[in-house]
Length: 441
Image 1 (spheres, rainbow, N blue to C red):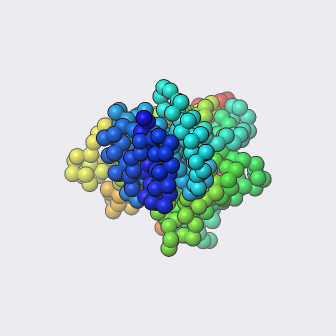
Image 2: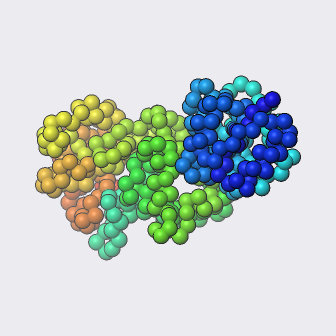
């Protein structure tokens, strides 16, 4: 006799299903929440787990991951059931390790068919089929990478007459490379980017990869206003390193909970997949991506994109290393972090780097996790960077102030020689990186 474990906090659904399965000669074990379900799965090692998606304590995604991570039960077949049918839920369940996905109310014939299909599977875990991927838009040419700044400000948006030139939106950069649309961070700049994408594609499906460096608010606050996430034809794949996988998802969802926002993350119609990264190297289509931890409070990374046109390093929040930095950390700052960052940006064709403070300002902000423009230029020079963009402009710096910082940075670079090109990131600015320009941008 085959054994099935039913995990559902809704007794009205669980009890009838249990009775029907017993009549069908299944041995049935019941659990009222995910934590109890995982304990019973380890104890009884059932053939199949039928698990509700939304439960207190541990939800269905947690159960799937816990089962797949336990060597004693990792091959157990799992069917996730839910009272809603979002493509993103199906995709997330599949990625967590589910073999099938059923929508309540479930008819017995449908359940028996799913059990028959599931129990006939052999070998490793087979996940539910993902929704078909939307066709990726192409860049200007197969050998062209396009980078556009949509948000360049740090900490908080600063709209107004004094920030019109460089812009007042917080961190968001768009990269079109090798057929992919890659968005770096979801600060308030992602709102106009979303509007531009919707106008460009005119209802055609869009596939987007959003890389989150960390979940400080100025890097995620624009996502609730990202128009493509409200279109079920689109797929938005969000990647980041914040805490556990559910930590990243819950952080993004938290800013959209009542009373902060009228629409919850789970109510967004777009096919949204949130993935907690564990490895520091991965691929977005043909674009290889490396991540590196930065010198900034909490879990914060930078990303290095290897495109067919060259390398782009995005390190928006990072405090440079000097004697003041060491003092702020009591002389205990790990030197391997400094070494890792230096190697990370080495020979980059484009470096977008936190340059929030002048040298005088930095003296009062040591240990805050942000860069000094003099140190930023020096690290770019030391590591043979070709083009540097000053980024994460302080909310207290108007256009004139940022312009003065840029002129100073260029003077420092010019005195050192080496041909480093220095710019200050400006909202709306777009540039093209192509193979023929690599090394001479």
